[in-house]
Picture 1 (cartoon, rainbow over the protein chains, first blue to last red):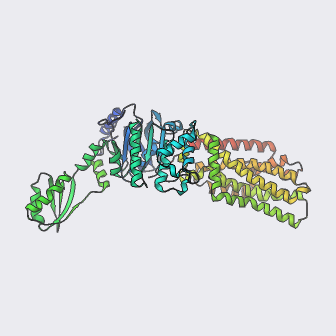
Picture 2: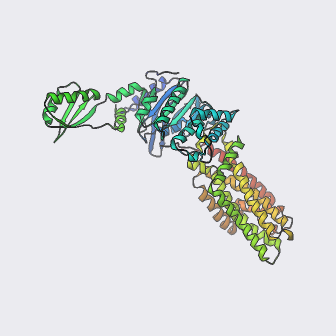
Picture 3: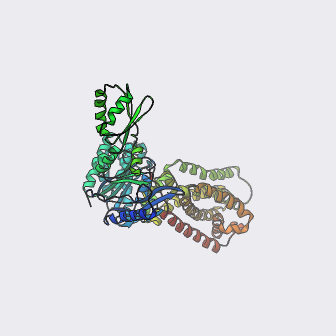
Length: 339
Length: 244
């Protein structure tokens, strides 16, 4: 199950509207492509709250290794993870964990560890007691030893005897991870696990998750930060506005993100002359002149940033201001949904 | 497993400021009892003990302590999000409810019954109030179990359990049960007093006992089992959000 499988994770439906029949056929094809033995499977899953659709017809599977669930805040990541973790009932479709229904099936938690996004942790317990409680509730034969091991794994030994109420945000995250790892589950679900961690803790946790993935565990984590996902995940699910915008090998998604059309706004000593010079370049496919500035559309972000100063120098034009116009992550997600 | 859940729940209930407030609440009738003893009020001490204990503790302190501990046992965790650490473990939901009940009911019963005993004995332990005091103390412990089981179920169903609990105690039991006799069949306070009447050898409580013992026992059993089953069922379909 380990290792990236090309085209293995697929969106439940196309982003652009299609006739019902075509959409149904696409969803059926995505369903058929799902590997039967994947630890996490979502089959045409939707979730709505009244009239608001939080998750819209998603079909994908997640196997061993680290998979990142990427999307801006409010995209539906937590709702999705909540359904995977059996905390929320899907309004439609089916979610399975290790072959069993996730919803209303507490027995499945013997093989799943969850690190929720919410910061709240019982403040009256020490870090060690919190991990030991998790071990006891998991019915482990030696809860003390299991808790000690988990605490050591997350590098929290020095603070293990202190009550969690006194912990920093990063320490709480590690205490939550220790409790999730105490029974060494084959599936680990983490909702924004790096929130509040300092760079050293972040690196440590990333190394830890990589090690666990190498041991064959299935790790699904959510993040709204592209760099976190890039550094850790082998595969990625991009979620935007409740839809699966893109999925698969991270490098492929990264390429899609990079090679999408970019718009730069430029102000120079002679906009018309520079615009004319740029129009002759292969990287540029659109120029629009305005009063005091002009915009350029390109598909090669890096290539254009190398080309522009050279073109300005050759045309004897001074550049006053160059600004990428649409670099917010939301715009990237939006683009992925549209394509 | 149930013991582990009960242990950590007890710790949570006692760790918060509300435990101190409840301690002050159960101490109030004791102070009244002390005052009565110091002033040496005239009249039949057994009757006075029965009236004081019913008015101050069974009607007021018992439901208030029970509503606070009962709705906090799991309701507070559902409210602040820490319930997620309990509900994502391979533990049957009925065991979780049992653990919560095992923590909140005894602490409520202990505080209220101790208050009954101290107050009743202060009023006139040497003048024959011990049997009626003991009867009300035992009945209060049973009442605590019933109230807490209902309020635990209510706190799983709704986040407004505390307010609904107060409305039940003040309006339903406090007002309607006095006006309409039929509503007494659905009043934990009436079950408590009926059981106390059956246990009281002096017969003072029996004069005003609203229900027969058999009715009270059957109704109590139905309330306990019903609220336990409903709480387990509601907990198994309870949705949690982890964030976002």
